[in-house]
Image (cartoon, rainbow, N blue to C red; front, top):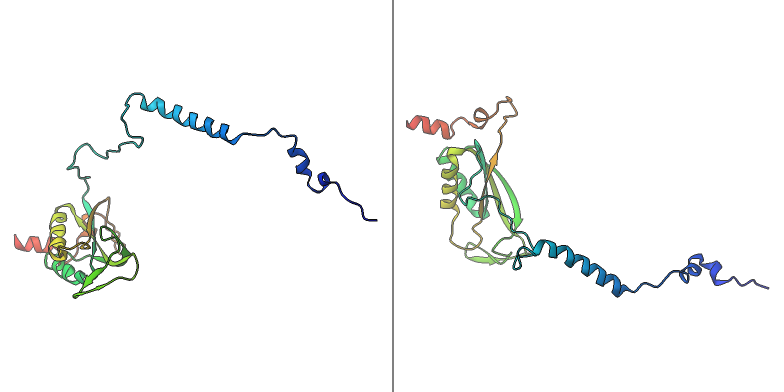
Length: 196
């Protein structure tokens, strides 16, 4: 004859469940809500119409520019504008440019791209090229102006330019730092000194 096990022996936790008090989940939600609101009331008493999200201000001045000797100009461009931009940069003495193929979307939202009179789209990301140029402070505006002049079509998708301060430049081959490392033969400084 087969022995029949008691249910409490099959699952030892089941017998203990009956001993636990029942918890009303609505009372937990009410307590949690009360805690949240009481916590926020402390901060909102002083400003009744204040937003729940904090207002963040990076600088008090709108024309703030972080001070640095060098800046990296990053330009996200249409791929078919890169050769025009790089040629124009060479003409003004910019010799060091890094180019990367990137994909993304901005105001364009990954919508249809136009090139050579035809429209195309594959997915939500649009193929772009990122140009990175590290220049001294006095070259930044000329580089930005030249990129805008050569890359602008006037349509959504022309790209963006970011200017980022760079704390130092180091030439790996020689160990030179700062202006000596940033300077390139035939570059901006050579062109501007020959014009003087």
